[in-house]
Each structure stands twice: as C-alpha cells, then as structure tokens.
Amino acid sequence: MKKCIILLGAPGAGKGTQAKRLEADFALPQISTGDILRAAVGNQTPLGLAAKQIMDIGGLVDDSIMAGLIEERIAEPDCAYGFILDGYPRTTRQAEILCELLNRQGDGDLFVVNIHVPEDTVRRRIIGRRSCPSCGRIYNIYFEPSRDGNACQNCGDTLVHRSDDQAEVVDRRLAVYREQTEPVIAYYQAQGHFYQVDGFRAIEPIYAELCRILQLH
Ligand code: AMP
Image (cartoon, rainbow, N blue to C red; front, top):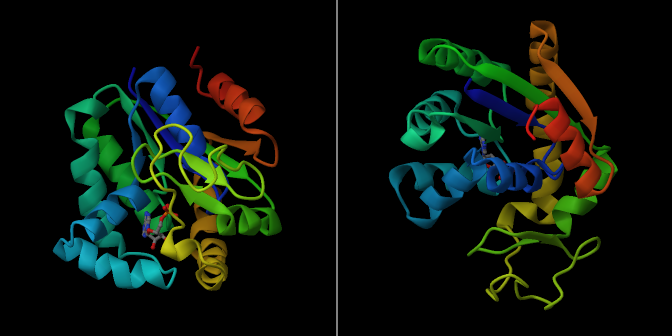
C-alpha cells in the first residue's frame, strides 16, 4: 500500500533531517517544498523569481502556486509507492488541496506526524543551521558542527547559511508558523490519523519512533 507521510513541525524542528534518513533507508522520496523553491530561485525561473521575494522576508508562497507544484511532483514515477512531504502543507487550505489530490490518486495510507520542539530551541537550531549545497547534509554550528569546519565532512563542499536562516527573518518565519501552519495540526487531529513526537531529543530516538509509527522496518 502506498505510504503518504506528512512531517509537520516548525522550521528547524528536524523535518528535513528525518525525511532524508527515511528516504535513504526506505526508498520513499523526500519532497521538500522549500528545496524545490530554492532550486527554482537558483535557476531563476519565473516561479523562482516570484518566490525569492517572499522567502527572503519569511512569508509563504501562494497556496495555488504551491498546489500546482505539489500536484506535479507527487505524480512523478518515483512517488508510485509513496512519498514524504517536508514543508507541505503549511496552511489549512494547502491541507484541503492535498486531501483532494490524494483522493484523486486513489488508495494510500496517510501518516501525519508532528515533530514538536519548543520555539526557543528551534530558533537556535535555525540560526546555527548550515547545509551542504551538494549532498544536502545539515549541520549546526552550536549542536552538530562539521568535523571539517566550514566544509562538508561528507563531500567537502563549502557549507552555506540560508539567507532566510538569518536572525531577522527567523522571527518572522516563526510568527508565520504560529499563525498559519499550527492550525494544520488541528486539521489533521480532527481527521484522526495524527501522531505527535517529541522533537526535543537526539536524532536517533526520534527516528526510531518515526519508524515505529510509520510501520517501516
Ligand atoms: P523550508 O525550507 O521548508 O523552511 O521553506 C523555506 C521557505 O519556502 C518558507 O519560509 C516559505 O517562504 C517557502 N515555502 C516552503 N514550503 C512552502 C509551502 N508549503 N507553502 C508556502 N511557502 C512555502
């Protein structure tokens, strides 16, 4: 049965880290809408040019634009056995749209997991976050620095500090999360297939709990 996994949580809660591990271990593609938008920004496509202005100030890209993007992505062949959504849905409207898309695709097991982390912790995590532009590995200068300083210990590329991970933008992103994304939790709680995990722990125990919830072994 197709597995549709939705990872919810504030920016910096660890969605990307956990999604990458699930992808590597279980061959389910990670769909990070943030990564897709950043690639569009990098390629200077019309979508990228419009999205950049919004992302730079910590806002959300329009629901209808995101709908087109996600519809196209989950129709790709690598999603035939399921996928892991990381960063989508971010509004209750996006959740409704996703529900329609999944219904149209037919049967599938939906798992919604909220990775909960206190706001002061996610703030530090985001501000300290550095990522490798080549292999995608994520580090944190406070909690988990690269052994090679500012170079990725996996592949040697120079680590980057996302422009929207700068302190000024982070507060805005957290406010947007509180106002627009937190209600998505209640949306899925009401539907009944909702799990919450404590994200204020090391990566390993969170991952083990996720695997149990998702019945992946
Ligand atoms: P992320 O990497 O998930 O933190 O996303 C980075 C930025 O991309 C967000 O702050 C938003 O500006 C934009 N973005 C990513 N996913 C979405 C989404 N589902 N809806 C609207 N904007 C999004």
